[in-house]
Structure formats: C-alpha cells, structure tokens
Amino acid sequence: MSVALVHDWLTGMRGGERVLEALCALYPDADIFTLVHDRGSVSATIEQHRITTSFIQSLPWARSGYRHYLPLFPLAIERLDLARYDLVISSSHCAAKAVRAPAQARHLCYCHSPMRYAWDQFDAYFGPARKGWLASRCLYRPVMSRLARWDAATASRVHRFVANSAHVAGRIRRYYGRESTVVYPPVHTEFFRPADVVPGQHFLVVSALVPYKRIDLAIAACQRVGARLRIVGDGPERAALEAQASGQVEFLGRLGDEDVRREYRSALAVLLPGEEDFGIVTVEAQACGRPVVALARGGALETVIDGENGVLYPDPGVVSLSAALERTASIRFDPVKISRSAQRFSHDRHMQQMRDVIDDTVARPVGTRW
Image (cartoon, rainbow, N blue to C red):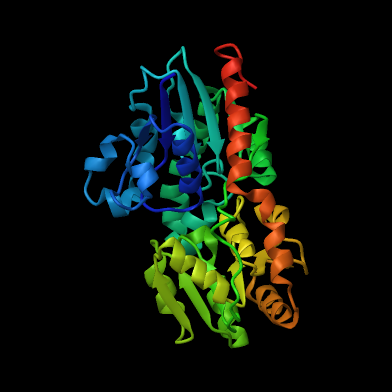
C-alpha cells in the first residue's frame, strides 16, 4: 500500500509534529507533503522521508513568514499531486485536511483543530485590538469568512476524522457536521519522567509564541505576583512579548528535548494561559512530575485535575491567573502521583490506537465516510 502523509507545514517540533513523527514510524516508507518545509527544524525521523512542498516554498520569506500567505493555502494544498497513493493521512490544524485524495484512496484526517484563524479564534489573530478596526472588519474578516466556508466545504474530502481530544471532536461536529474518533497525541512518558531535583520558585511556559497561546497573560500575571517566568519557544509574537516583559522574564528560544525536560523538572509549575485544543505540553510537564496551571477550558479539562496534578482557573484574565499562581505555590503536589496521571497519554498507547483506527478505516469499502 502506498501511503502519503500530509502536514500543514514543517517549521518546528510542536504537538502536531509529534503526531506526524508517530505516523512516520508507522509508515517508514511514506512520502510527506506539506506547504512549507524549513529543513532541519523537525526531527530526523521526519526529515528522512521524501518531502514534497507546495509552490509557497518558493515565495519570498516563506520559511519564516509563511503565515502571511494564508489566503493562498487553499490553492497550494489542492495542487499537491497525490494521484498514486492508496492511503492518505492528513495531520491538520489548518489546510492539510483539504488535500485532494484520488478516488481509489482512503483519506483519514488526524485533526488537531478546525482552522482556528477562521472560526472561533479570529479575534486573537485578526481582531480590532491587533489589526485595527478598519483592517479587521474590511480586510481580514472577509478573507477569513471565505476561508471558513472553504474549510467547511472541504470536510467532505475526508473519509474519517480522528480528533486529538474530545474538545476538538466537539469542534469538528460543530463546524464540519462530522463525527470523529478521539485518539490523544503521543507523549514520550519514558523520556519525560520525574528526577530527584528540587524544583525552583519560578514558573515556566513552553509554547509557540503565537496569539492564541496568550503568553501575554502569563507575563502579566507573573509580574503582578512578583514571580519569575521562563519562556521556551519562538514565534511571531516574540518581539511584542519581549517589549511587555520585565527583568524577571527570560526568553530562552527553542530548546532541544533534553533541555526542555530539564526546564520542566526545575519549574515550580508550567503555565498554559490560552485555550488549548489538547495541550501536549501539559502532559509532558505532568510526566516530569510538575503541576500545570491551565485555563479551565478546552483540552485542559481532559488532562488537568484541579488540586491533584495542577490548578484550573475559570477566567482568561490576569486577576484570575494571578490567583491561580498564588494558589499553586501553596499546594504540596506529589510528583509521583502527577507523573502517574500522564501515563494514559503514552506514546505506545497512541501508536496502538492509531493502528487500530487505520486498520479499521482501510477495511471499509472505498468511499465510505463516517
């Protein structure tokens, strides 16, 4: 069976790329198709595959500024030639699920999220507070509305959806009118594990620096309570966040897995101030025995048990998060118990569940959608 793996873009190792890496392990001979590939930014497991990019790859500044070409994504993804493949697996949070699979192929989509820019997170990226009232309403709103219609219309190209959380399954049902099977992303719990170290008194963020992650709230809350904050990750929001931050905030940029693990282990707690689709960082931190402070919405409700392996706070504001930070500092968490709670998201469990879902999909008649 010839297999094609389709991913939105390859510009760093985040949660979506961990899923793609697992798919690469399942299909070591599969070809990868993507909009843009920044060579060397993803793992060797992914890089060793034959990778085909879209025409966006040849546009100016595509590797770092690919998001500026968002209106071109539909054309670019639909031009990828998958004619010779029997099985297409898309790993999608933007456009990958809209790829055109051949008539004889089955198309399974592992959906990290319906296109968040065009649906319920428009304001975080293109709202008046970010782009100005005129540009937001007259430029970005029409473009994103058109993309939302395209995103919904192309859901019919997928034979089966797999969601990365029950939260995302609900969004797939709401925006696409489709059901999905929940398979949580893989977490290397044998690598991310507790160590015999005394955690520091600082908080930690591990995240792409993009609007919906709300790193600005983490910075403001830590400054409000006088706590130190270390931030691992990079992205288009870095300059603005650095301008907001005081001397108690350190930006570490992108780090390798061993350094990230060290940061998890040494933090008082890890912060997830935005609404997450799943939040693989949550489980990595918990696997290392560290509690997570998260907004009580989205995927965090499936991973964080308040008072046991973290703290949930109700409102996406500085005051609410500040209170959660103070509460976290007062709780004596059990690292072993926290780490144990992460085992249900192990890499091995993910792999077995994906094998089962793929085998079941392939066994169905060609063209079956469910």
